[in-house]
Picture 1 (tube, each protein chain N blue to C red):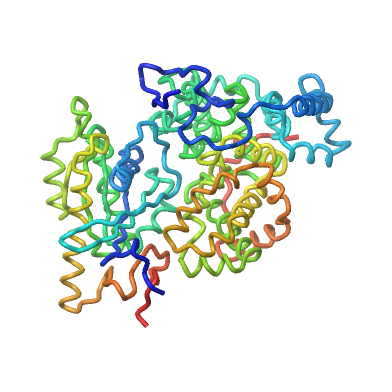
Picture 2: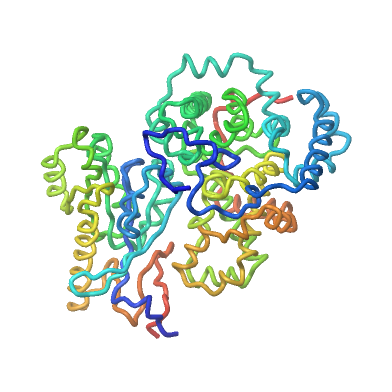
Length: 357
Length: 215
């Protein structure tokens, strides 16, 4: 088939031209193992896994909390293997705490979308067509995808005026909207930024991007502890983590990583929190370690932004990521950072903090 | 360590691309370094980086260009990249007056964070959108003159004046550098000839050894 670029006369590509996630196929298709046909055995295994998941969740998520309380380690293990794609949206809402926020705040989203105005409206509009531009859902100008994305981002910018809208948030919302409704996606963004289950992410987007700076500090130190030779090389070549790692944290790997990998990272991220971002980052560096230590500055920068296809296989990268134990060191490094820079500011708008019981 | 043939150059100049979000910085960079333009481009998160080696005034110059996210909030990260830059391409969108009005704020940003004698070029991009033009050439021209900046209008989409804009700023940097090396002046940002240390994108303003050392 010809590899023609999608132009305006053909806004919705034929099904054969998009991958299973809805991204328009590029000339360079990564061998993710998802496009090839599944064997009968694999199919059976997948069906079995799906049955287990359905049982664990219960109808509409009714058994979930009970199951998590009883067997948290089983849940963790299954999530690390990947949430079945057809259940992903529901499970994400359950593990992030967003379902509870939604139930506690009926009508709030509608109010924010319809009646409120935001100072960030023009900024959001400017970026709408620049978010997942190769996904069919977001390609049609003013189409349902772009409208939903706008609504979620605008609603958030009103809900939390101190954060407002910051570039990168569109990738969070854009990824979520592929798996759930606008209102569900909105509350999941709230759950993440306000910290319903894990540490709040809002510091990634507040004035001064304080949490980005803290995470990069922590990542740099961890990297040097685990890979001293690479750390030394980075020092010699004057590579600092903001050159490659900012977008890992700001968009949780959804900005430039293959989508099937981003989803697997998000599964774990929503259940275990931000430490998976550190672990995946470390795994990426470790996987490419022997090449990276040889590269001079410019090639190094390029390599750190273009990891090889074989490193993008979640079943290779994630087990490597899990092998890094970072929780304790992250806490210590956070304290160390706070000693130098003071505590990273959290939102002053406490009245907007969701009530979580 | 010997310099590999593909890395041969007389000078290495660090340049930053700044300006409001959505004015076309990333596409100017991709047009200049790869001769590509992407209609479906993503917004830049943080910083991007690319290089190109070219002939300027008979010298081989390697331009090392840092492309920065335009949104104000990102300056917390991006302003660190102004340090050590010899040139700045300050871009606005000729169809969006606010992006031109914000040029003064970007100049202040540079004054606060960049080296004092950084060479600045004002670029009005997107001239291909003729029917949408909202910033007159004359206005930008006179503003540039008042502020002592060079000025050019470009279209990254149609590849108009992109080459010329980079050639111009690199030429200006070269003339300043070569004048300095003749007079022996060593103030401000200086890139030094091959065989000695070169100023590159160093966070702390230190010189970086690319592959040769002055010692």
